[in-house]
Length: 138
Image (cartoon, rainbow, N blue to C red; front, side):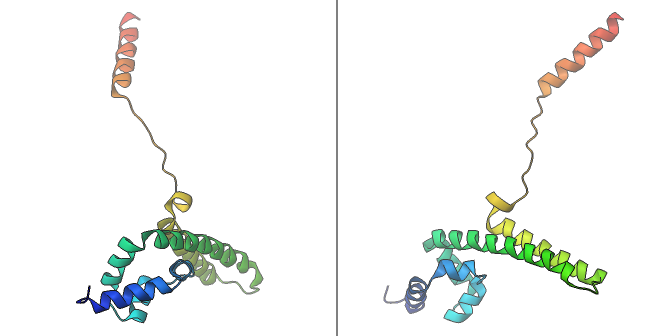
């Protein structure tokens, strides 16, 4: 890999840093790319291919931190004596963004669960036919 000095330098820097802690504390790929002097897309491809496990762990930890921040934001509202509706709306939006980020970073834990509905057309058809048959006999 003698012809890839940027790749070697970035790999070396990422290997020596605490990547899980960096992501868990809210560090972004864009911010890290700026620190390392490379493009965001280059770093993103490298991290998601060579350091996927560390990225996933950091994202899961960051999702937990975001959930805790939501509680802090909401619990802090009653402490304001002159609370305005604008402040409540701002807090609501801050919580909403953090909830969204948490669901993206750890969907198994924080994404809304979807109910699976199974419809059997044959049973519906048979049920309708039975109803028609009972109506005919009456």
